Image (cartoon, rainbow, N blue to C red):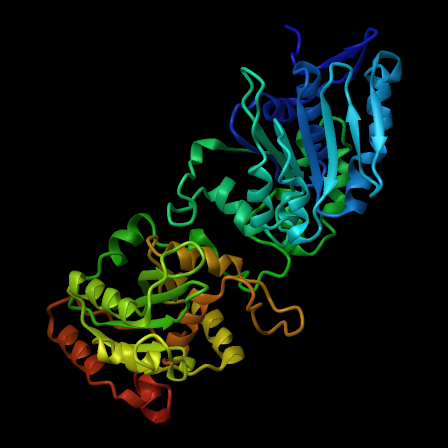
Length: 492
């Protein structure tokens, strides 16, 4: 049986896709992503995806973009003359017209065209917004922002009967914008608040490794990839989307830190009689987050729930409305919250309720917030300590309930600051991580050398421990002083 995606000219095969490339060409999903590692034939597949489409659809208009012009020249433009000649060249009607900015347009004999462009800056997408394309591809998608992607996709439309516009992309994991790509194609956890028409069925990810490319000397290439730093080796060699260069918390692993299976049954429904704690990071233009914590009897700290509010894709709530929503959530669950910690800047922020501070507004609405210790560098060190393994249980000290999706995503997404690598890049999604840091700075690092005694609920030991928790003085809650008292309760 002949390959419908192979191109033969004058008896010579000029393009014959291998299995992964063929899967990319044949996919009917609206948004296709091909990649996963270096050396798997991604850019070639993208370019020939446009050649194949344009040759079969007269009058079609398509677009291939890279983030920078130099990248476009290296990965595509240098090959256009060769592709054109392989398909018959000017003798059969192909024409190549370079543009003034160094890109260009390839015209096909049937009146179709493929335009090549670049969108280095955020507003460069405006160049394309008045055009319509039946097919758009972004090569090395992780170098583009989500805004650029969405704006380019707004140009996917057609008047050609029987044609459905499609988006295509190729990429390696681990670029500066990897997290939004991972969410849409790999995790497929985009919420209706973020994209009201998102449908996971529209997104098709075709993972490929260098060994999937039969034209590559895999043995030699693998040797070179294994010389890379560990995080880039996992991304480029194994196509691992969970680690990337500049990741601030490489210790975080979904498989380890997010509750599932037996651990979810054990820790995921701790009764309301267990005292909870809460910490929040305020946000209005950006997301704000409240996290709730509960300590299991074996010393495992559970991030039990989260409330994400405001930000660019949610209704804007003022401080009093957020406070009442948080209080109602606690009431519905029947929890007793022992302490509420928050960004100390909330003691200075005013404007929502008669000029009083956000801290006072929350207190007036039944949420007694207290300023947290905002030591950033030591705070991140405290988070790292809690992400490590507890020798007594063989599991991490800190576990996260799967309903806390925003925290889970951002723990894996935050980057180190380029100028201060011991701190996170505050331009990224750090709000849930800040809330986690505020809470952990209000308690000591986990004790690794002393096993924790476990008392079954309802026993005298269990009741006594609950009483000790409730009587814990506010000075320790706020991380103020009383070091001897702090060490006394380090293992509870």
